[in-house]
Length: 281
Image (tube, rainbow, N blue to C red; front, top):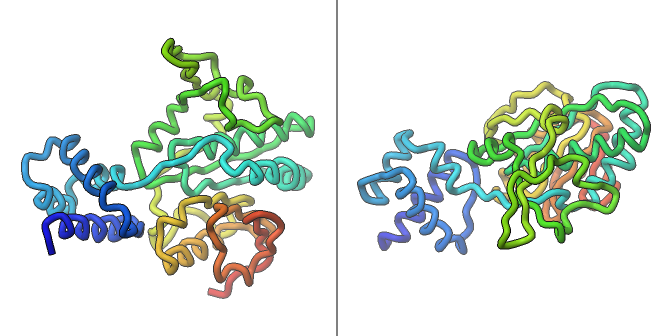
């Protein structure tokens, strides 16, 4: 085994042991680039092999996880899920004036949970009544969670991220800084949105999650399962399902499948599922 292949295998083994994430064979260039960047950022003086040995012993573990997790996202990605949340889920749940609890299982840099929060406030305005709702948003990457908590994003007026039923200026402060070289500006989410969301570190590959059984009315688990093996995807979905109420809604990504959960849910739309019964554990 040549040195490069040896290093890549060590990275894959470490990442899987820490997070459960499986890197596919076509990620070699990405692995090399991120490994060298990690070494520079950590100011590590030894070889890459020695760096990986140090990580295996527990040093630079957080930096390693942050370096090798992927955080591609944008506001209102797969808009149809937010439309369903606005038109079906929230009006029904708000009838009893109960607290509505939502969970975002892969927060990344925060665009998804903030999109959830904006959808709640838009629905509240449409219904003309207060919706008591809260969102827990987790990620394994501490850097992106801090970015999400800060709530500052680049925005272009030509952006197609936001749906026609929402005006983004309602939910963001005026530009913080203007880039004269382009039409991009920096925008910051308003405190009203930030107060609705609790960001916290969590590994979806952990044996247990820090939530109560049937805690959530809505779970977003979108475009994260694809980074796990088929077996681990199933384990994650079954663990999440434990925390979803009967009648609750599960949203998964467009290229993801509920697998064996099909027996316990009703599909009502494009990767939209309603929990119909509990799993016998």
